[in-house]
Image 1: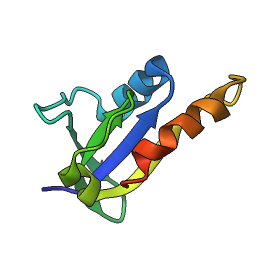
Image 2: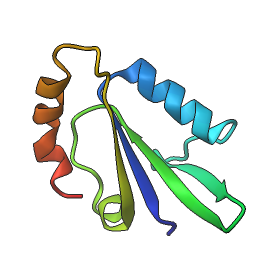
Image 3: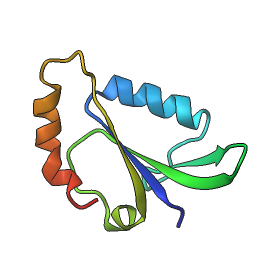
Image 4: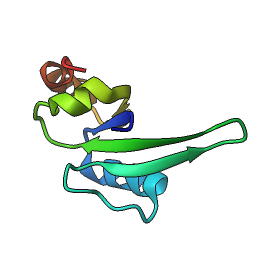
Length: 94
């Protein structure tokens, strides 16, 4: 299986916008993963994007393959820190 980039969105709309911008037309598969090719001047890599917007334990296979964790936080939202703190137990497996 390909390496995973786990993207946690505290705001569903913001998460959807970011994932759409990265993945383009790529669709989510039955394991809630999106295939994405990173293509730069120096290398090309196939990875899976794993967007998460609800508090649940990440599947063990995804947790084992996670290479990157991206937390999407709205700094203008007053309770962003409280939301983030509530996610910590679910992210500890990563």
